[in-house]
Length: 362
Ligand code: IPM
Ligand code: MG
Image (cartoon, rainbow, N blue to C red; front, side, top):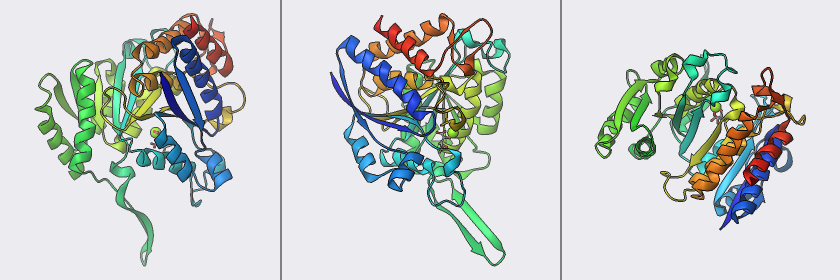
């Protein structure tokens, strides 16, 4: 089959990890007889420097014409000045909104061979296999009003957590559908003891659950949820939550896996079913201090390609081939710096990509 993929490497280590992910993608193409046509675009700091905007209309249009988007990372200290008019992150937010990618899937899986390479006790994180479904185009990130202004008493600022019924319903349905194919348990995370938007969220969750009699729905307050992630994470399966809550919880959850360098993500424009348009990116940032040194762990981006094959191309076998190759290479003891431990074989970004591509080739 033929597929068009928009490729936005971005800043810092973005281009390096993307290069390895593309190598693995092309290897899948050769092995299974698919053609992946790549279309390059600029996003983030590099787009600000060359085009004066973090996301150009042309890039957005190009992404819309493709079957999926693969993104590296955006940002860096060079563009960090809070006074600056545009920030690299604006490009990412505009892309999410512009492509209507409302459902962000962030699976957190602890690889058995890495249970000793985190700060947490192995018995706590053993068996962790959960997915956070983060609402990505609404909530506190996008609600209006959103501004800073001057008053006679001093400066003021406001952000707004706003949700419509439609926005809440569609993200909850993604959660329920995923739960159906997993442990049939859905945790809806909110702050309904304080926030009106959360009370509506909880009410709609209860209403929608009638359509999913096989899924057990549980509500959890976001602060309690943060605690549960550290306390008994292996009990958690599918969680669904507001944009900002999901942002915070997934950074916390990523520490269960030892390194952010291991974690992929998918941002989808619909309930995953057949071929769903989406954008795929590692959950880590651009790590400017690691850039250009062949250090970065490309596994998160490679696993993001596996998610792309699954959700946007409906190529489940191909997807699993990549996931199994990653497992096999870790099993053989190869490690990038971030997951290195005694007695293992230290490799760089490119070597890790080569090893996984070779394994995919079989
Ligand atoms: C993430 C990141 C982004 C977010 C930033 C870079 C805007 O932290 O994808 O989690 O806050 O959504
Ligand atoms: Mg984040």
